Image 1 (cartoon, rainbow, N blue to C red):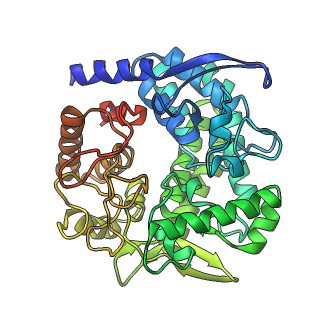
Image 2 (cartoon, rainbow, N blue to C red):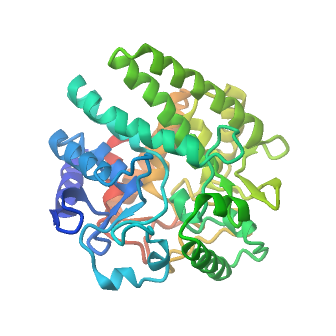
Length: 412
């Protein structure tokens, strides 16, 4: 494990980016996903902060500062920041349309809200309440943005407006939103491209976007991570003796769990599904994906945990040679497509395994958690820190190599 930690730290330093952006008039310091993807991604960066806190808290703090430095007054933080602007990146098929109408240096989308967990990790490592006070209100402002701007139906669940906002871009559950009954990823890519053209045309106006309901999804994994962040805010505010805020977020966390159980749970299939809002109707996206398992990370009753465990341990579903695949094996849409860039269609990812490993430990399912840790470690030792892996052979195929967030293995 010591050698693995050394390799993980070496990888993070290898992918370290720092400099000064003249247009934004800001210094930057962050870990990029890999050598090819130079830019700063939101949830990648949050993972990097968590891992870097194990090695160098000063670096972790600098990355958090960089991520928060472009935060808008309403709390919005983009999913990609182009610190070193390159024209070839701007003309990539989606990025050109995703650019925020106010700046070519960042996108108009968000990503899963891992932010509070990153601040918590820095605080637990430093025990420095002054550092906590320095960042907590900016972090809170991001969650306020989600509450105010991304909950159009007022049900406490956050809506995403593109598949990319989930962090699991081409997860086949989103094929259903685009009426792609064949689960052909090429068709979904076409629909996403059309949608982004429209969003760009209306300058990413959220009111118009939610009115059109082209893609209005309350995603299970996104909202699970959101709930985890709300619970974390309660803890962090308690640490700085703000009892009022701590209580507010503690109660809100409990309410969100109630809604997650009420709206996402499918009693027939005994699993959680994301919800889509379209033409003023609400329906479940009934594809068993890794997102369906995420509520394991929350304080849910054991009956739900046990049902989810049955899915995880089933070799016809999620318990393959290298679990946990991003799509259940018995789904029509299962890939795993390691030799394409159609991501999240059955491949195994270290970051999702990290969440589920923590969730299983939370509910004292230690045996299965340790098996996931062992198999995830075996993937890293055999193939290196890759973006994703084949769930049968482990072969990463066309996955990005030396991928920073897979350094999360040191936190298993």
